[in-house]
Amino acid sequence: MSQFSSRQRNALAIILASYLLILLDTSIVITGLPEIQASLGFSQVGLSWVQNAYTLAFGSLLLLGARAGDLFGRKNVFMWAIACFALASFVIGLTQSTSVMIAARAAQGASAAVLAPATLSLLSTYFSEGEERVRALSLYGATAGIGATLGLVLGGIFAGWLSWRVGFFVNIPVCVVLFFAARFLLEESEPESGKLDVMGAIYSTFGMACLIYGIIEGGELGWQQTIPWGFLGMALLSLMIFVANEARHQAPLMPLRLFSDFERTSAYLARMTFVGAMVSFFFFSTQFMQHVLNYSPVEAGLGFVPMTAFTFISAMWVPKVTRIIGNKWVVMGAFALLILGLWLLSNLNAGAEYFADLLLPMMIIGLGNGAALGPLTVSGVKGVAAKDAGAASGVVNTAHQLSGTIGLSVLVVIFASAKDPSLDPTSAWAGQISVGYLGCVVMLIVGLLILLASALNSNMRQRKMASV
Image 1 (cartoon, helix red, strand yellow):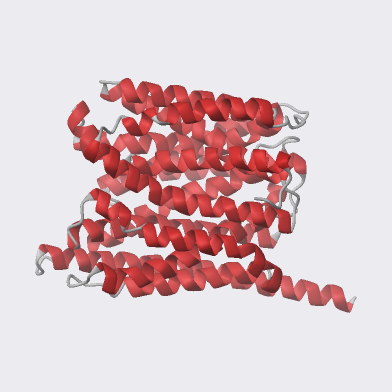
Image 2 (cartoon, rainbow, N blue to C red):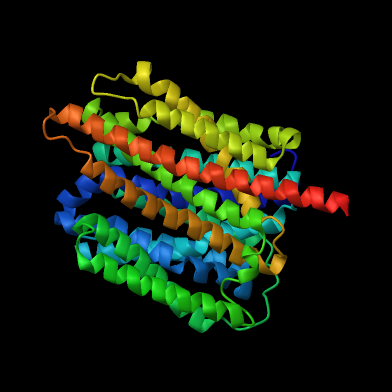
């Protein structure tokens, strides 16, 4: 961070700390769910809503939360979101009620829906396009890799050795520090003139809520039921009306001009395949370490540490490598590394050992993970006007959030259908997880093909311009 001015360093510290807070809160709950169920008396179905309420509110309100920063000032919106996140965390830490727990988790998700795009739009505001922004986004990408793993480890430690409530109480002092740091160190952006696109907000929020709820219900009830398909149908209709509304609105919630650039649109689509594969990778790897290797939650979390270390190393090298070969080739190389690592994991069986069979693929995946997220984010906000920074950040975060939910839901169905009743339980788990890893490989191959098409299109345009 020494390359940045003191103004930029202050902003980057606040941005990365708030982003880490969101990431930790998403993953820290996972390893604490059994203790939460025992403590509050959740049913198995009710327990799933501890995570689903957060996911539903987060994904549904992202576009609205992103636009709020453009209209009301990014610093102001950031501070309100941090305050609400702290209050929701405090309520969760104290609650003895299942209904209060779910409502407060939804409030956390709504706060995160404002906070996540605010961090990215602030980053775009403080760091100019080019190498400066690439360096900042590399740190942003490294934070993403570290946060996911650290959350799993801390969740296991808190739940196993202390209390699941500690994971929520620690949010409060962090939020207080971030609130006052933002108040005194961040500069307020110039609010964009214009009114909120109310109808766009209604259609997008309802459509996204139906889409995510339909996916959640499909995973829980099964896709042979009519309820998931009914919600997906309402989502499709609502989102179609939303797009039509955005096309004619003077101050749209999601300006359709964001999709006029093929490279930027390709980055959104590739990001979806990347995040879908990586969220599924964490899920399947946790299952493998706990059910096949018989690791405890804490040991399983520690099993991701080598991947995290290589994610950080890779992310730190991204700016240098980008200068040499360009952003698009860095991200395609990252996808190739991820495909290789996940293909190696797909060959695991019940006799696998961590150091002999998992360690090398974990390190390869870490290299790919660290090299992918920053360049994908660079492409997702490249060439965006300052007035659209919040909206573009909202699209990036929406693609990120949706793809994790959709990707895991699809691959869990494939995972469940691959069960072989003729095998012993450990071998059956290993076989199912292997199929899940192969699904991740397919997702990433699709993403790599999208990126390759974008690169070829860019080369063709450059040749055409050179010939004129």
